[in-house]
Image 1 (cartoon, rainbow, N blue to C red):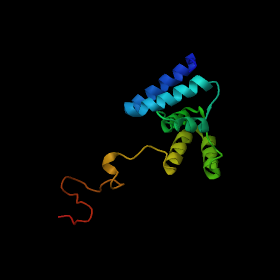
Image 2 (tube, helix red, strand yellow):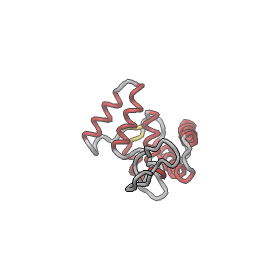
Image 3 (cartoon, rainbow, N blue to C red):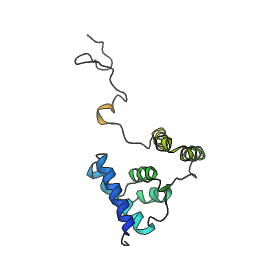
Image 4 (cartoon, rainbow, N blue to C red):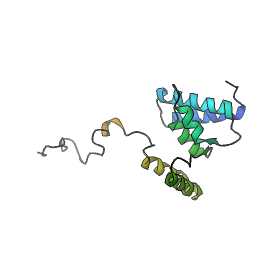
Length: 147
């Protein structure tokens, strides 16, 4: 693999710091770091990276792309894949032309609607919603009456 430039090393360390600030598990950040390192070594940082390139590389064993795509989109270093879905491409284009204060939240919301966001937390996964309890012992299991 080609050596990383100083700018590429900075992007990689910024990505690692971003992952630590979001408390990503080491097991999930390592494949993402590997993906980003490979992309930066071969393509550099002089131009934004194509989303198709990230997703193609992420298909390989020991690589991951979702966190890399999210980070590159967040930092404005990603050219979105507009050919896979015309409606999604239009939505991304509109989100990218929105004022800066709305650009990131709009892209996150599109990710959520496309199920490309983070997975739900384990305690909520079986029910898919927050419990409506207001205190201890007031909750009932699904299908039973309170009391």
